[in-house]
Image (cartoon, rainbow, N blue to C red; front, side, top):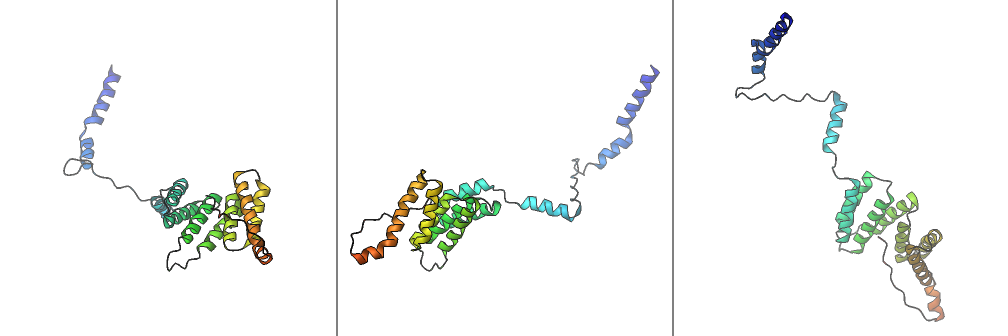
Length: 211
C-alpha cells in the first residue's frame, strides 16, 4: 500500500508541478499556438548540394519524354519532338530507340524546308542513326539511314545498309521493305547506263522512313 502511494505521488508531481506548466508555456507563442520550430540546415556543403540537386531535378521520367516525343511526332510538331527526344537521350544516352527517334525528328524537321533555315538537319539525323546502329545494331536506324543515303544519291552506302538488314532479318516486315528499297537503289544506280543504252525504265515508288 505504501509503495503504491509513493509511486502515485511521483506521477502526480510529474504531471502537475509548475515547471512542466512553464515549459509548456515556453513552447507557445503569444496567441497560444505552438511555436514554429525551424528545420535545422543539412550538415555540410556536400549535403546541401545533394538537397538542392534533389529539389531542382527534372520530375519527368525517360519513358514520359519518349511518350511526349512520339506525340509531338504524330502531330508534326518536330521542334518539340526534338526537344523531348534530346531530354530522353540526356537521361539514357545509350538508348538506341531514343537516338533513332531523335534522328527521325531531325530528318522530318529538315524535310519541312522552311525558308531561311540553314540547319544541316540531314547530317544531324545521320549522326543519330549511325549512333543507334552502333549501339545495338538497331535495324530501323539502318533502314532510315539507307533511305537518307538513297535520297542524297549515295547509292553504295544505301545498298550496304539494306543488304545488312536482309542478312540479319530477311523474313521480317522490315526485311521485305529493305528488299524493295535495295532493288530501287540498284536500279537508280544503274539508271545512267540504262539511259545511255536507250532501254525502257520501270516506275519507282518513293519509300517512307521507318518509325
